[in-house]
Length: 398
Image (tube, rainbow, N blue to C red; front, side):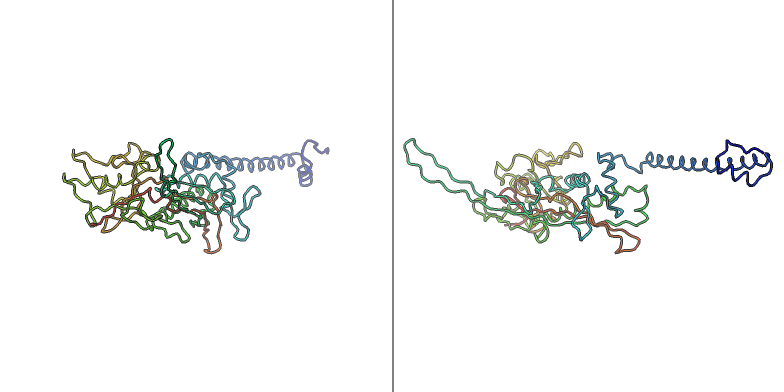
């Protein structure tokens, strides 16, 4: 019997060794070919099902339209970030300072977190913001406390010396703020979970809370120096020591003074005009108070019965009080006797926030079994600048 020559050598040898007749040989061949086709049909079917599941997840919104990719962050950056989440080291990834095993968060994601921080932190929207350059450990600002004097003179008159400006210096060194979001390893391994968005939002929220508190009441020890930690005085600008704010009193302990027409706006008007005219113009000028204080103030009316508080027309527009923007920060104190619950001023000139560029990530899947912690840290500092630029309303009788 001649052996068929069109069959694959391995298959032909196996069939010929086990069969005696052409009918048996072709029957065996058909059985193997049908099995081969069936197996690959199943594989293709599984692949098609997997593709349909992925498409369903995208259409169902598991990958949100405002996620990292939609924000312009490339697939390569996202892959790097996920690699750090899972503890992998890639050649394209920046590596942090060796012993602590830290990774530098990709700059695009770091920039996105900073952008959200500026939107959510009230004082960041008002204050002067500085980003340190490479190798700089602190930022120094010279503040002109009191301007120099000037004189008038006749054409032939002798020119006498004028007074010299009094200067003060402020130096701000960024300190570390961190957040430690934690997820289960099962969630970490679930590819349908938008880990980047979760961590971005969690880190942003924690940093915003910590920063906002420190910018207002921080003691300057391993954190920014809050403006409410500085002393205040009722002395005018030319007479107060450098670093001391001015306050005006309401005339009532723990309350606004009532106007002759039954309103309560006079204290607020006095607060505005205690600030010298050059400070009352430009970006960063406005009020700062908490929600409880705002709920009182927004009910005040002028002598004609009109509200002195106006709401912004859109979410991007600030609310305004007597024409000036109002920012709400819950770290400001409530109205009480001798408290300083309302501040008004030029915050661009009155407070500085200094950022050290870059955010670092350390991944810890050892401390708590079955969970992975992500230690995000960045450095930020803050301190008052020109204390003539911000005034406070003190709820005191004298």
